[in-house]
Image (cartoon, rainbow, N blue to C red; front, side, top):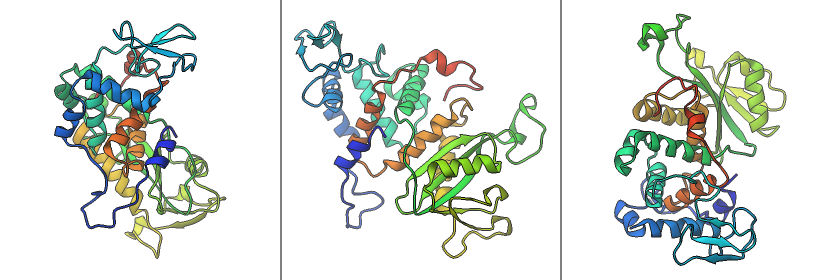
Amino acid sequence: MIYKDILMSNRKETNSGKGPGKAYRKGVSLIELFERFPDNEAAEKWLEGWRWGDEPTCPRCGSTEVSIRKSRKPMPFHCRNCRKYFSVRTDTAMACSQIPLQKWVIGLFLYVSNLKAISSMRLHRDLKIKQSSAWYMLQRFREAFGEEKGLLSGVVEVDETYVGGKEGLKRKSKKLNAGRGGVGKSIVIGAKERGSNKVRAKVIPNVKRDTLHQFINENIEPGAVVNTDDLMSYKKLQRHEHEFVKHSVGEYVSHQAHINGIESFWSLLKRAHKGTYHKISKKHLNRYVNEFVVRHNVREEDTLVQMGLVFRGLIGRRIKYKDLVSGMDGRAN
């Protein structure tokens, strides 16, 4: 994971007090945000600290033989080894962007501090940039998180959900006329480890047995206890102990078996879908799903740490706008 080393070094003991929610987390107020980042220079210095610490390193050759240019032109740093100029933007998803660094940092703050996500329309108003630029910025933030790695263990809840507009509310030209329920929607499967509350999720093409079993085998340790509902496709797991609840007859808890944890994760994802984005292109749905997976998994970290983790994820990643918008099935959100 791109943030594993940071999480290990910044993990804090849970507050034993009685503060509401996650009161032990150190947040950042708007006043503190603008005091810390009053201009582009302050934002640049903070980003440089997250990328290199006290010793700038050439992103092209890895040399630490770097000189700092007082004029900061054409770029702040010059590598004596490969004789190339570079800045904190070089070899990141921010390279070639005309958006000032102060707006990038404020964008990071808005991105991580809105638990139900932030729309590109809201970001474009808050940062005074084009809506298309705000959408492009948010897609780069989502790409920065990458995919969660590692296997879940212990008791793991597994469930699938359907994401998309209701068939009855679609325009006549958009209706598939193939039934009700999940028709026309995308399928997302997820797993939540009950002990650590870690989550994995991804978009899948169908709910056939091979598809669901493959996800379980790829994300859950052999021997773990898997809790599901009574969908037939979950039956006959070979590598895991299987317990299930019979949703078909109104049963939601059976002894210690339930999937209430992963269902609460679905509710947060769908509140963002309906209340913030309104529509998510199928092309980008997996990126949105992964965004909420990682948001959930790093929610214990302080706000500035979360911002730094996203920035570090931008290193080495380049996403072209034309690739993002090609073949989209709806407007950008």
